[in-house]
Each structure stands twice: as C-alpha cells, then as structure tokens.
Image 1 (cartoon, helix red, strand yellow):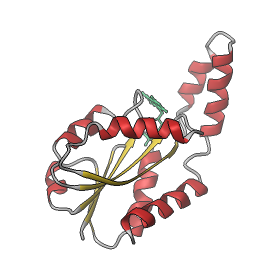
Image 2 (cartoon, rainbow, N blue to C red):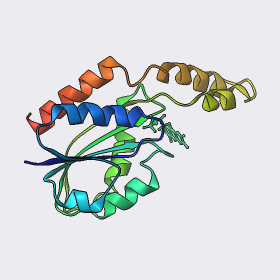
Image 3 (cartoon, helix red, strand yellow):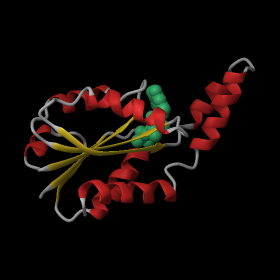
Image 4 (cartoon, rainbow, N blue to C red):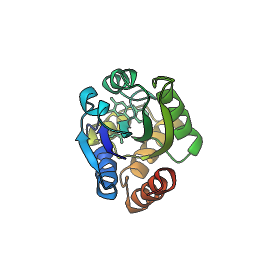
Length: 163
Ligand SMILES: Cc1cc2nc3c(=O)[nH]c(=O)nc-3n(C[C@H](O)[C@H](O)[C@H](O)COP(=O)(O)O)c2cc1C
C-alpha cells in the first residue's frame, strides 16, 4: 500500500502533524502541498488542513473535489478546541467536500496555536465575557499541538490504518 501526505499549513501546526505521520509510515510517495498528480499515484491519502472559517481552506477544498476512489485519513488543527463536538463539526464540514467515491477511513483533530496578532486583536475588544473567553482560549491554544496531541495522533493513525 502506498501512502501520500497532502497538507496546508500557514503557521506550522498542521505541518507538525504531517511530519509525525510521515515518520510513522513505510512507503510515502509524497509529502507536501496538495498536488492532484501525486494523489493519483497513491492508495491511501493523508490529508491535513488548518481550520479557516469553520472548515478547511479553499485551496484544500479544490484539491478534495478532484479525488476519485481514494481511501483518506483526514487530520487538522483548529484555534478553538476543548470539545470533541467542535472538532466533529469541522470534520463533517470538510467531509462534505470529498466526493462520494472516496472513503474516509479515519480522522484526527487537535488545537493549534494562533499568531500573536490574534491576541492583540482580542485585547483591543471591549471588555466582555466573549473577550475573556477568546483570550483564555488563545492561552490554552498556545502550547498546541503538544506531545500528548502528537501521541494521540500516532494512536489514531495506528488504529485506523492498522500499522
Ligand atoms: C484567517 C484565519 C481563520 C481562522 N479560522 C478559524 C476558525 O474558523 N476556527 C478555528 O478553530 N480556528 C481558526 N483559525 C485558527 C487556525 O486554524 C489554527 O491556529 C491552526 O492550528 C493553524 O494551523 P497552521 O499552523 O497549520 O496554519 C483561523 C486562523 C486564521 C489565521
């Protein structure tokens, strides 16, 4: 079985997950930005995204739309976290972008730190419960993905991909 890894990552969080997956797999034909030609050659595709407006970014959507008859393991990072339901919602939105001929064999998400500019934006907000929550979440996200996230990812890949 050949494997290929495709991911989008602006600030490195999702790239960290991709690296962990690459280190686990035997036969990796490609690891990098979405590439339709490379996807055609692999049996199992590991597809990673950062969360943008509650789903994957547009370039990843375009890539997903081109896939046919592939087995896919989806992975991603999001600035908000702490709830499996939140991650499940994002994953189900991303799955709507995947053609029916493909099968999602597993998925994993964890929180990912956000750039300092986001904290500055939150700090500029009028004091409110929402502002406090956003700042607390920013702090919480600032250490992720952490070692426990990466170990959970390894366990998830082992479970679904039987490696
Ligand atoms: C423009 C922009 C939009 C974002 N939208 C969301 C969002 O809707 N939900 C969320 O949980 N995180 C959101 N985030 C946070 C990122 O998804 C998160 O920090 C992610 O780990 C970044 O991954 P990367 O380092 O691989 O780029 C957003 C970040 C940016 C810069």
